[in-house]
Image (cartoon, helix red, strand yellow):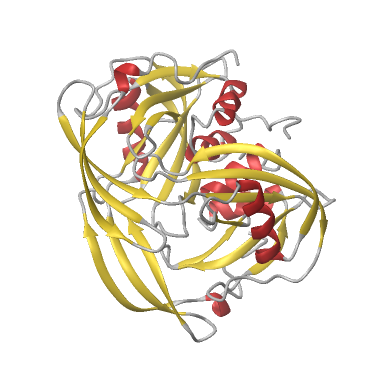
Length: 190
Length: 190
């Protein structure tokens, strides 16, 4: 690698002074931390811990990608997203990816590749998402969790940009499609 | 629009049955909700409320983009990200965008355009990020918040892909650069 992203970062480092657990849920753990700032003062940091998730860009032979729509209670609306799911404890991301694609969409894939990883919202969340690309799709029967109801549809890149304009998709979908080369740039937007 | 993302979504809708506030912080509010599922059962939903944020793809004349590096306590590491920040109460996203770019990087921009919006992590967060592209940059003096220490550097798209491989960037950076046409697809990754 010609560039070290962690070089000369010592002057940025914050150190944990105290931690107060404020919520211990099934999905989320929330902490109220106090840190020592690099300049010497103190600051509060409200942070969320989450096991991490995977997201899958499943590409059909015509170049379209598989999105699923589900009700997102946090957003109070339905959202179109690439298939994704939370890792089981200690599960390899590549295993989660195959499981979630099959459960949410019914598709299995002949060919898988890793697209890397990214922090979800590092200002307050510890969550990382691992991205995968899947090709050589075979349709099958979905078997979503009992508390999930999903629609499945193939989207072109231009249709995904329509979702962006409507506020009807999410950042992992844009990040994943982009890494997989399936998202065109917006044109002429003001 | 040729495609309505909200068409025929009634069969997906969950309705709120009860809400227990479990954390009321400066940045985050956390709720333990119970919802009625579309199929008739009940499920728990742990959700985080956040005022929402903006993110800015600031493009230099040579096509490189401005990233900032800061310590992200939630991730326990330094992360390279496009400039971004939380909206003040009731603030227009376009106003937040200009303020955050100047505060975090010192840059002002002659030309601004909207790139749309996306949900951050709709499985548990209500947060939306609004994306902007800024061009015609003029360097100036940064004035970050007292609890923020930042590095500023210009990155090519290929350098951002190196950050992805190192797990050293985040989803808003990938989503924003992609919408602005500044992120190449990964090639030959397995």
